[in-house]
Amino acid sequence: MKFFIDTANLAQIKEAHDLGVLDGVTTNPSLMAKEGIKGIEKIHQHYKDICALTEGDVSAEVIATDFEGMVKEGEELAKLHSQIVVKVPMIKDGIKAIKYFTNKGIRTNCTLVFSAGQALLAAKAGATYVSPFIGRLDDVSTDGMDLIEDIRIIYDNYGYETQILAASIRHTIHIIQCAKIGADVATCPLSAILALLNHPLTDKGLAQFLADAKK
Ligand code: E4P
Image 1: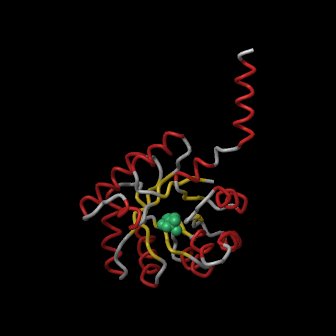
Image 2: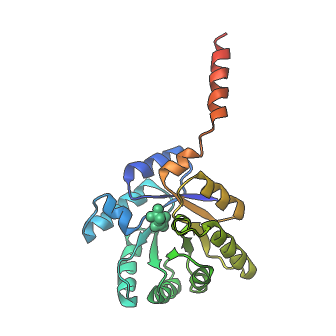
Image 3: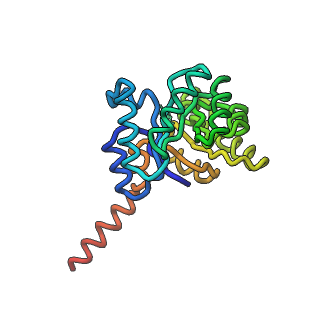
């Protein structure tokens, strides 16, 4: 399973990259705003800066919600760097835009996916990635993991090559469950990636080994 980091924070991206386990980056308008990145030139430069910190794919989201607007924005984003994947919302014009980008050889990430039907449409339009939001489903008392499982079954039934990019991940259990089901990618906050390191028996065992080594 690939690990993407879900942030626009350059220091966090570097930390995950330096750990040696980073396969890519996802951003969204809220994450860009959190870093105070405003204005088209600064936004474009920030995407280039992110691409310089990873060898993997970097999802950059369009703001337009109409077909023409998404195409214009997406083509500009795709030209910034070969690692850019154009992130498009799961709406009617979004599906049309994904099909357009697919035909043009521009890679896409269909975002804000909350149902298997939406994921099926994204695959049929040729999306490179589909982003089901696990944590936000959990927030409304729906098991987000059931959705990952349903999408995996549907994509395997028909051999769709769209990669399942599990998003809105909040903690390590989400990551482990995604890996068991066979999600292709998990995009996680740095805290969830680092939390995978932790086990009290590791700490206890290491302390004992170090103490014994001094004897
Ligand atoms: C990633 O592509 C999504 O934008 C992100 O995972 C959403 O996460 P959140 O629900 O924690 O905002």
